[in-house]
Amino acid sequence: MIQRIQSLYLSMTTLISLLFLKGNILNFINNEGIRYAVNFRGLGMITGENKFELISNMVPLSVMFILIPLISLIAVFLFRYRRIQLKVTLSLIILSLLLIAVIAYYAITVTQDHGFSLVVGYKMFLPLLILILALLGYRGVKKDEELVRSYERLR
Image (cartoon, rainbow, N blue to C red; front, side):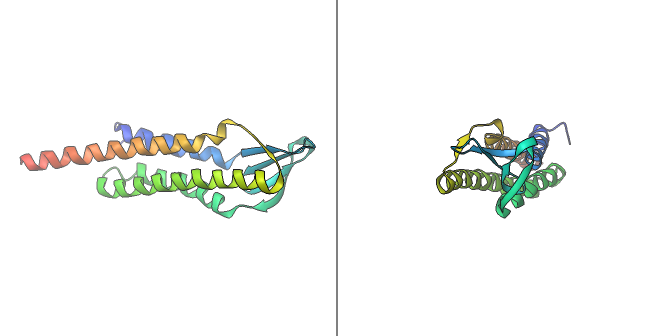
């Protein structure tokens, strides 16, 4: 299972996507210097002592933060069923694209509606890394499936 490179890619996707469950994904600051953040629970204000006061829930984002590591972990353990693993990995790619779109939507919406400035952080770029790893995993599973089909033709 772990000898296959796509299992490593999908495992890394799982681990990276688990980072979204803790900490802030997007950070904002307004003109008065008050910090706001988007995390797993939603949009909130960061008060003194780094306490998070929730302003609004962002349910689609929370659902994706749970689904991506779950689907990625399922894809890792489907190594015996390559065709199903291909479909699950493809759904992971689609979900990763949706995550990127939803994060961009919330970043644009919050900056325009509330007049906040976006503070660039490394977690903003993790969805892109998740997408790349999912694509590499898909490519590896597809190569394995083609290899098995070529051996079956030889029989």
